[in-house]
Amino acid sequence: MFPYQDALSYVLQHCRQLKPALTPVAKARGLVLAQDVVALEAIPPFANTAMDGFALRANDVREPPATLRIIETIAAGHSPTMLVGEGEASRIMTGAPVPEGANAIVMVEQTEADGDEVTVNISVPVGNHIRPIGDDVLKGELVFEAGTILTPGHLGVLSSLGLLEVIVFPRPRVGVISTGDELVADGSALKAGQIRDSNRCALLALLEENDMSPVDLGLLPDNEDAIEKGLVEGAATCDALITSGGVSMGDFDYVKSVLQRIADMRWMQIDIKPAKPLAFGLIAGTPIFGLPGNPVSSMVSFELFARPGLRAMMGRANPLRKRVVATAAESLGRRPDGKTHFVKAIVDYADGKVFVRSGGGQGSHMLAAMARSNSLAILPDGSGYSKGDSLEVLILD
Ligand code: AMP
Ligand code: MG
Image (cartoon, rainbow, N blue to C red; front, side, top):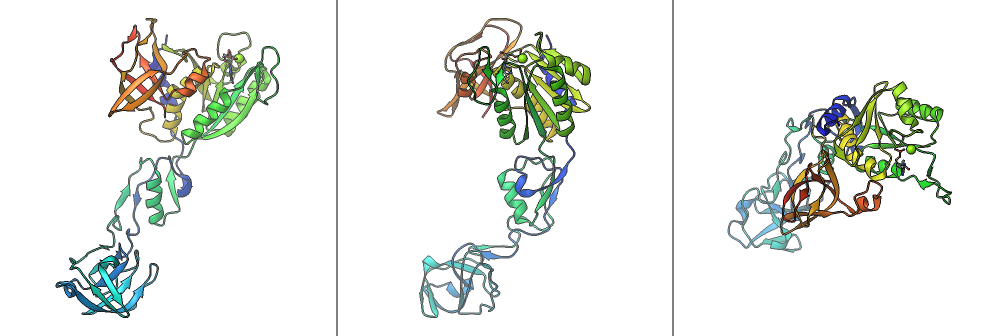
């Protein structure tokens, strides 16, 4: 059997980063910056008030109450027209520029206005409630370095800087193909021996969930010509391909025979359960993951191999899932067989601790149990864990 870490390394080595491309900021969430971002503008771009209130000279309200003359009203988005002199104040709204002459803001709640006069009931320090220019980001500052994973907050800052596009590693377009004469995808009544295609929908959704760009390449019959055409066309139009089924030892496993011919493949029997068989290779440079057909195996294989490989293509420095140490809330038994078991599991967070229990049926056809799980408990070769033991868990959500 092929060691899991070696299989993963092989996959990561052959999943090259995609060429960085200019992308609209609004479409860049989850992507990795391929450029340093230097601020060409300051944030905020001008000194403004953090409160609705009055702009005045702090010195004028040193001994409250103090009555000042209101000289104008400044709304957000509008420029002050008057210099605030001694004994004067300008009414000002949150976000509006602080007028010249003023050096503090008093919030409206601490004032009483009467006609063109306002009585201020507190003294305030110089700079009170004023947000200076560049308080958040200075002009010329290196705001985000290449390699930053863009979150909604990052997109907000980029927008604040007036950037409409940034250079990022693009979302990989990943084609998904189901294969098998037994599969039905149109909702029609099942005939003898038929089952429904579940892998394609699940794999496309996994791609979506991981900020990749899923491409549905359909369901192909167990027919060598159809499979070859699907794979060649898919490889030409996508950055990577995922197939499920047809890579085992069966008589009609044509994905295997076609890939053997048209791609540079590695056929691995990995020391894990489920998802022992993995076919991985390149069709004219395009990575292809030949995942096992069993629904749970295909999802686990996606998690353990395809997801890291595709994330490496997206420029992610750490393409792997988070592992946490959890306490077994019940015994998690297994038999020694030379493999690491990735067990469908449910992680609960209680009293600041992480607990893990089985997610139910562990068969590789039991997709409902997978759907109800939120993690994979890692059970190294041996006889498993007892209640209260600590173990590593891969968090899937
Ligand atoms: P195979 O690897 O083609 O021998 O398939 C292994 C098992 O997975 C068989 O029971 C198939 O019917 C099942 N299977 C293959 N592809 C799918 C699919 N797209 N959706 C659901 N089950 C599948
Ligand atoms: Mg099949």
